[in-house]
Image (cartoon, rainbow, N blue to C red):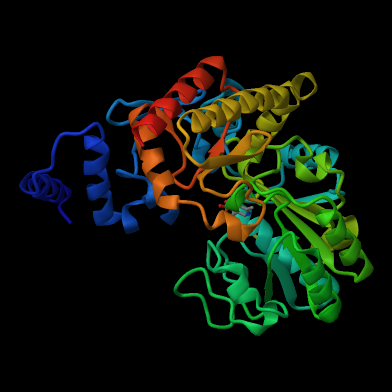
Length: 457
Ligand SMILES: Cc1ncc(COP(=O)(O)O)c(C=O)c1O
C-alpha cells in the first residue's frame, strides 16, 4: 500500500469531517493512521479506552511523560504498572545499554540469569527456585501447568474481579459478570463461565471454578467438595484489578490453611504487587507462604520480563522434564539486566524507595480525599502502598467486587479525560500508580489538578 497516499487521504478525510485543532490533534491523526495498519490502532486492546484519544508518546523522563503534541503530563499510569522507577531511570538505562552492546540475546545460558535467579530467591520469601519468562500471562500459564502436573488434577479455582492475563485457560469475562449471577446459591459450578474474548474455545474454561473473593464459607465448601479435582487456587493478594480491595483479615491465611490441608497448590499472582508493595511482594509483607508466586510488571522497570517462583518440590518438575517451560527470549540479556538494575535500585538504603513511594502516595491520596470532600462529590479511594483505585460511588466502603461494580465508571472516564487537560495522566478505569521518583512537586500539581477537575465536574 502507498503510505504517502494513505496519509494524504486520512488528512483529507479529517479536514472534510471538520476536524478541529485540539490539544491532542497529532495524537488523533496518528491514531487514525495507526488504525489503517495496526489492528485497533493500539498494541494492547485496553489502550483504546483512553479519551479523547489514545495518546501517542514522544518521550518520558522521571515522573513525567510527553506526547507528540508537546503536552507534558505527570505520569500516574506508569505503563500500566511497570515503571516503578519512573521513565528512563539512569540505573536502568545505563545497564541496559551496556547489555545491548554485548548483544540483546544469546539463546545460551549466561551469568546474568544465575545472578537474577539468586537475587529473586533471596528477595521472594516463597521462592526456592525460579523460572523466567516474558510476561505476566506467561508466568501464570506456567504456574498453572506446574500445579496441574504436581497434583495430577485438572481444576483451577479463581476469583471474580481478578485478572491473570489473557491466555485461554484462565481468561474469564473481565470485569466478570455480577457475582451473584454466576456464583449461584450453591457455588460456582452450576453456571456457565463467560469467556474473556471471542475466539476462546468453548471448553477452554471447563476446568475453571469461579468464586467470589473474600467469602470464606463458600471457598471452604467448594474446596472440600471438589478437593480431588482441584489443582490450584490462584488469587491476587490484593484485588488490584478491581478496586484495590484488600483481603479480609485471615482470608488469605484461610486459603493457605485449606490448600495445605487438601494438598492443593496455592498460587499468588503478584504480577502487580510483586516489587511494588515491597521487595518480597505482598506475600513478604503479609507473611504468607504460597506454593508458587508469579511476578512481572515492576520487576523489569519497563522491559518485558516475568518469573514464577516457588517450592523446590514443585519447581523441580521443570528440571526433571515433567513440565515444559519454553520461550525463545526467556532470560535474555536485556531483560535480565533491567530486572537486576530495578531490583537493586529498589533495595538501596534498606528499601528507601518504598518508604518514599508510600509517603508520596499517602500524601497524594489524602489530597484527593480532601478534594472529594470539599466538592461534596461521592467517591472513595482504596489504597495499598504505591497503588490505589479512585472511584466515584455512593458506597461508603468498597470491599467486595459487587460494590466495586456500583461505581460510576463513565464519570471516572470523564474525570480522567479532564485530568489530561490539566497535565495528569491516569488510567481511565481509576487505577493509579506512583513511582519512586514522584516527589512533592508532582503531588502538589496533581492535587491542584484534581481539585479543579472536580470543581468542573
Ligand atoms: C495480576 C495480574 N496477573 C497477570 C497479568 C498479565 O500480565 P501481562 O499483561 O504482563 O501479560 C496482569 C496484567 O495486568 C495482572 O494484573
